[in-house]
Image (cartoon, rainbow over the protein chains, first blue to last red):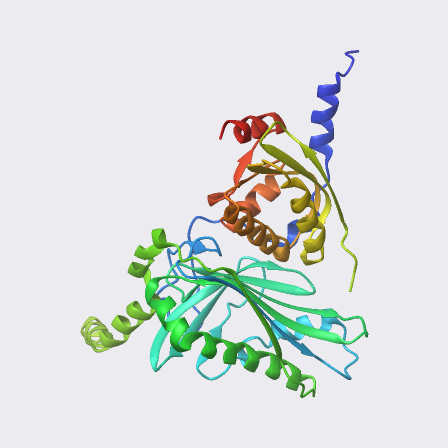
Length: 257
Length: 119
């Protein structure tokens, strides 16, 4: 019988190491977004083939914004709140920001299409769910999205035992156009969107409480190396898509004959 | 609020680097533990911070956010951030979140320390 050396034992230990308990909550790694089924009403304009971009890849200042709402008086647990949040995610959005989840809903790896109106301009894009457990889920943005980073939607019990719903954003504007937009009006508009989402979630549970917002500029420097992200700007491409709609209609009509 | 389920200890690694050994879970609750460890690790002439993830048991997306804010802080001090000991699963998470674009991942402590002290 061959004696095991300490190195062999280490290799054996590594092989037998159990899978981490977060393994099921993370999406699989992909190179680019691939979408097979586009939900009805959604536009697959700036999603297919795009790479995901995080808080380190965008152009603008990096902001962390934390929105909280205390769901005072409810008995539901954080898990129950997040389950409802996942089920009703599109319904909690304001009218100018429509989400279209896939049939699988909010689950790791799934893409949520977005059709929004920003300053009257259409913006078709999406996000991918990179993490989802019973008490939170996180979406990551693709190239061209106004933001480069992550949004995490979660619920927890505070020190008083009250369930608190939270949205935390860690993101930069994806390109210079978006950065200017955010500084002028976009940031306020975005804050209104997430405030609306939390208020809608609260209303679902019969609660009407204020939303608190904490924001911190984590990195005030812009990343000039990311200037060329402009080429994927979803706002500009969505505008082009809208303008060329009559041409597509004519082409489709011709093909149908 | 739940307590942080993580312990971190700091040790020197050559003249210009410090290692932070992470034992446990990296979630939002680990923020103060991580920042305290960084403050300790960053004493003196340290130019590189190395995170040892061999004993990382759990990491959620908030843990990734913590690493981003740590990285920004490290860069502001003109230091570099490296890691070693990531399992295949956690390497994949670094790739999904594109943290590997900015944080060097090494296969061993020896390799990380060598890279840190030659930078």
